[in-house]
Figure (cartoon, rainbow, N blue to C red):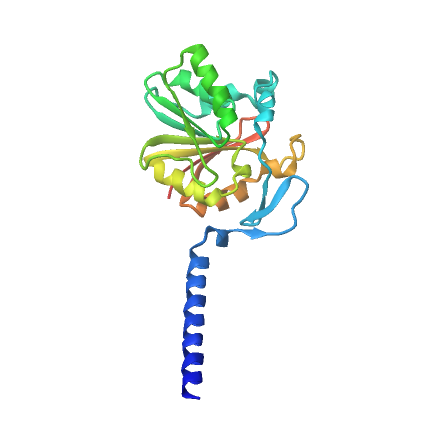
Length: 242
């Protein structure tokens, strides 16, 4: 009888220790940041601070990124002027895609460098071909993961995402690393199609409201410095460290 009780006590202690270990592991998991539900047509069923994350546009959409109408529709030239780039800055273009913004920014910073960061090897290959063809010296390609842009701490003056943030599977983890990569006076520029404007002809999950953007950036220690409203379809939001 004593042996049975001792065995039962030992089993209970082992079970409780196992449960505590599981609880600690769960509390450390990045999954706690997110909730899950049935996915909508254009979403993945994963939610961050009340916003459903959208599907990623694959490399087959590269031609849409390079469409001839893009300058007229989005006024990319004005967006680059809004950045007030300095010639020697180091810029990280997160989700650079085919490099539409990357190479335009690189021309403006001849003494600096653009780090073109993308998750998809096919997009990196497209940019690699452009670098080789045009003998571009100040663009560096970086392979990202879903949770990391793979940037060194305190290494960049500016990070930018153009119509990309809403697709990040792990927005909090990626943004935390971007904040760490920014120099003390660095800035994060976020362009997203305006959710508030029903006339913007873009799918709902590929838009973002100013209110939602501010909430999500605050969660990683960024505050809105300015939202420049001179683009046809997009918010041009400048964030700095709090």
